Length: 484
Image (cartoon, rainbow, N blue to C red):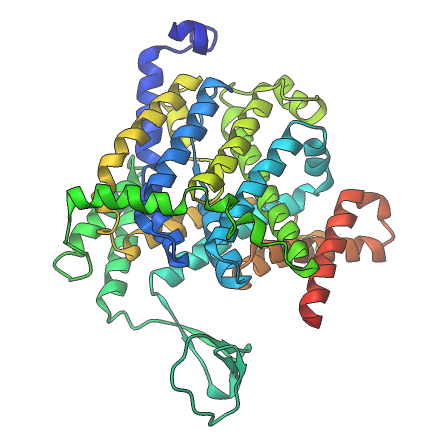
C-alpha cells in the first residue's frame, strides 16, 4: 500500500529511510511549537491556543504536502510571517490580531487562486531576480533584528526634545503625563548595547552562545536543544517559570484554542477591515506583500533543496514556470503550501511556509511524501508538550530568530552590488524591512526605486505591467498616510 501511494521504488527509497528522514526533519523544526506562541502572544493572543493552532496547522499542511504532492517537505507557521503578523500588521499598522488572522486567510485564498492559474508565473516573472534576492535577505535582516531586540541586547536612548507624541497626543517639553501607554519619537533615538546586568539578558546571551556552538558543530536538533538547555539554566537564575500544571494546561489549551479558532472569519476579523477606502488599500497591499514573500520563500526552498537531489527535475522546473495548472511536483507543492496558509488563518496562527529544515530530512534520504507523513505524526505527538508552553522564557527562543535571520542573508551574495542600478533598490528593500519593521514597506521601497531608476534611464521594457500596478498602489498608500 505504501509503495502504491508514495512510489518508493520509483524514487529510489525505502520505508525505513523515509521514516528516519521524517524523524530527522521533525526534530530539526519542532522548536516552532514554542517559538510561534512566544511571538504571536505579544499581540494578545493566548499562547496555549496558538500552541495548538501551530500543531494543527503543521499537521494539516504537512499531510497535504505528503499525500497530495508526494514531496518530503514539512509545513508550519513561517518565522518571517509571524514577525510580520506581530510587528508590522498589529503593532505597526494598528490592526487587531483577529483582523491579522483575516489577512492570513485572505493570503491563502488569493495564493490558491494565483497558484492554480497562469497569474502565478506572471507575478514570479514580473519581479526582477535581484529584487527577489533582496526581499529574502531583507526578511532575514528583519528577523535577526527582532531577535536581538527580544533578547534584550539593545537599549534605545531617547532625548526628550525628540519626543513627538505620548499616548497618541502631541507632546511639548515639560508637559505633565500621568501614565505612558505609547510614545513616539523622531530619528533622535540612539540604539546602544545593553550592560548585561539583568538576569533575562544574561540568560539570552548564554542561550545565544549555546545555540551558536551547536549550529557551527552541525548538531542535529540544535534549536530544540538550545531552548531546553536555556530553559533549564534559567531556573536557578529565576527567569524560568517553574510552575507546571499538567492537567490544567491541557484544559487551558483547548479553551484558549476555542477563543481564536474561526476568528479570522468572524465579525472582528475579515469583515471588520474594509471600513474605509484607505483601510481597503492597506489590506490589499499587506496581503500582496505577505503572499509575495511566502511564494518566493517556498519556491526558494524547493529549488535550493530539490534540484540537486533530483526531487525536482529541470523539466519539472520548466513546467512550473511555463505550464498551466498544477502538473509539476513544484506546482503541487505550492498548492499544499497555499492551502495550509488558508487553514492557518482559520485555525488561529500566521502564514505557513515550506520549512528549510526539511533539507535535514532530505539529506537523510527522504524523497517522498512518506517523510512528510512521519513529520505530521511527530507534530501530533508533540501535543503532550502543552504544559511547557508557558514555562519556556521568551529569551530562550529569541536567539533562534537571530540564527535563522543570519542563514537567510546568503541571498545578499546573489545581488550584483557593483551595478548601482541594482544596488540602490536592493539596499532600500532590505534596509526598510528591518528598520521600518515592515516587510511591506521594504518591498514598496525596492519597487519604487527600481521603477524610478529604469524610468530615468528610459529602460521601460524592463518594467513589467504587474510592477507598475503594484508600485502605483504602494504610492497611493503612502500618499493616503501623509494626508491622513
